[in-house]
Every structure is written in C-alpha cells, then in structure tokens.
Length: 317
Image (cartoon, rainbow, N blue to C red; front, top):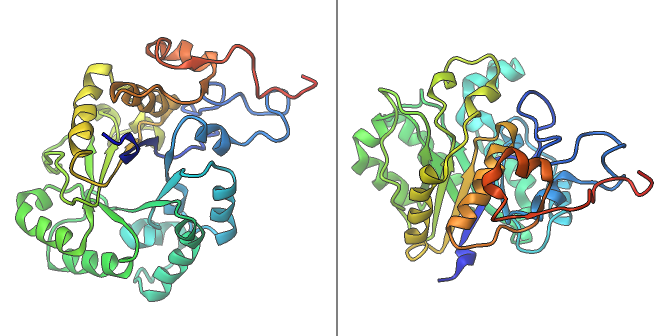
C-alpha cells in the first residue's frame, strides 16, 4: 500500500501561552536562552509531520505573503489544510469578534480567502479547506443552500465539511446526496457525545479524499470550562487510537488521499497521539523529540528518536 496516501498531523502548531502551551514540551521553552536566533516552530514541527491543519485562518484571513512563507519554511511535499474564516461558518462569532452587524457572505469574501491560499494552491501544498460548522448549525433548507453555495464557490479546492448537529445524521441520505453531489468530504469526528451530537460511521463518502479529526473525549469540560483550551485536555490511549488506525488503513485502499488530524492540543497531547497513530500504521515517527516530550508521554520512548543534545540552544548557550 502507498503509505503516502495517509497524512497525519495536528490541528495547529503554535500554542505559546496558557496551561496547555507546547513550549517546554514539544518545543524548547521560549526565549533567547533556549532558542537560537533562527529557531522556527513551523520548521521544527515539519520535521515530525507531513501536514498540519491551520486554525489561525478561522480568526483572520492571512496575507498571501504569510502563506507563501509557510511554503518556504517547510519541506517539499508538506501540505496545509486550512480552516475557513469564521464569517463563512460562525456568523455570530464573526459579529462578536468584529462588531460588524453585517454577517452576510459573498463572492468578495470568497475571493479574499482564495487569494490568501493561492500560494499554497499554486505550489501543490494545499491539502483541504475545512468548513467547520458549530453544533447549532442544523439541517434544513437554508443550511443546505448555504453549504451548496460555499462548496461550489470553492469548487477548485478540496473542501471538507464538519457537521456536529444530529439532524445531519438523522437524515443521512440527504446529507450524503448534498455532499457527494458537490464533491465535498464529510469530516468524520471523534468528540464527546451528547443528546444532539451527530452520529457517524467513519466510512469515507468520496473516493477522492477522506478527512478525520480527533478532538478528544473530555466530556466534563467540553461545554463547561474556564478556558477554551481546557476542552481539548484529553490524551487518547493506544487502545482508543487503534480503531482509527485500522479505519485509516482500510480507507487508504479506497480513497486517493487521507488526512488525519489530532486536535487534542492541550500540552502537546495531539503531537503524542499523532506520533502513536503513525506507529500503529506501521511507520517510524519522523523527526527527533525532546526528552521533556518523551518524559511526559512515556509511550513515545520505544517508537521515536529522542534527542541527546538540545539542538535549539544558541551556539553560545
């Protein structure tokens, strides 16, 4: 089997603050004492994984110069999947964040986002565009019309659609007709399940690509938490990950490309789980891991290479 079909990475690579920071765990601690002048988190991350799901594009549309820099800072073949700007999927959040009373979206919004991703698209480094909708986004005529418009407006890109409300799985036939007809992947998600949560079977709905997101299972803090990062404070055991590895293995014989992202990012748990998934799929996790990372997640010790010297230190450090 061509293992290149399965790409494994994390949701985001930059978590510099809060209790769930990656600094001092996956990355060296912040500051010139611990990082040489040319240290780059994205470059460091890309030594270990061949794809990343970009979260920052949900909060703002980047300049093309920014996405162009991502290409320069990562090796050939590395792919970026980008979360769509919140205006497309979360109008209430957009209004709260910007103070704008106008939450309507149009061609100009699409063109602005397309311009931002163009450097990735032209260089063959664009994975998929993720349209992540909230749990309040229910199946209905207006919602289906919006989905159809959005997917068609981005038709030259691979679009993955994340739906969380059970109304979409209650009428699974119409949801599949809509997404299949437009060539969009139905994102398969693992998350805490509640009464109105979507039900999914983790089967691919397309032959072109398959998109999976693991959010963790922290049900206690999913809705009630002090900080947004708390809901992603969950570490999958090897036994919990194994079904996803088996599913990915089977799906890889059907689809042309598969993206598997871990979003349980608190304390770099997503990094540990992504490496473990790679191991379960028969790969040797790439890159070199800091001793602090392996100490925190000891299941990594037998499967990753642990650095013996701190290569991020300044030369005079």
